[in-house]
Length: 227
Image 1 (tube, rainbow, N blue to C red):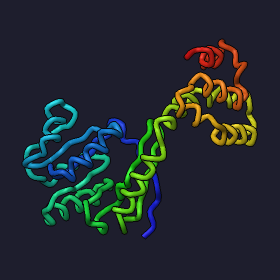
Image 2 (spheres, rainbow, N blue to C red):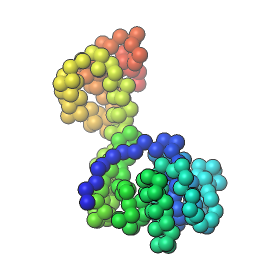
Image 3 (spheres, one colour):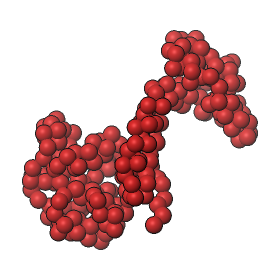
């Protein structure tokens, strides 16, 4: 089976998790980080899920799954130890074209949840196509040690510069060369050392935006002078 890697925008989308145990808790946490509106359906929930529910971060239906519970959902995860419930969730999701994952049941998964590394807007998803999840976890742990907060800060700094760069250099090849020069430079070392002023100067110099007028939507010259 081949998988098509994709990042889903679940912001404010209804996502349903069937089950209230530790596995369900982990799935809910990932969905919340993605900005989803999460509904948990389960007779009982873990203490951490109960905290999220009490704070209004998660909607809760305190009973077992019933047919019709998936109405309006964009994505569904079934994390119960009841095969009959999991089969019913799968059948309803399939009937309505809803993305569904039945935990530890690959034939009943229209998507698989990867191991994820996050540093701000940098998101790396790791999958073994369901064959060795432990390997994906170990790779995630290794990447978490290698990729520090300087990568998140880099994206914060360069994000507002994409439009000025496009205006200054309409040629795609020119922009690509400047981006590669930047990411291959010492800018990450500077950020890692805490020298953000030097890192900012390096960014605008390599991108060729050091003289960007302040009248533009992104005030790059002010940005380079402030600490």
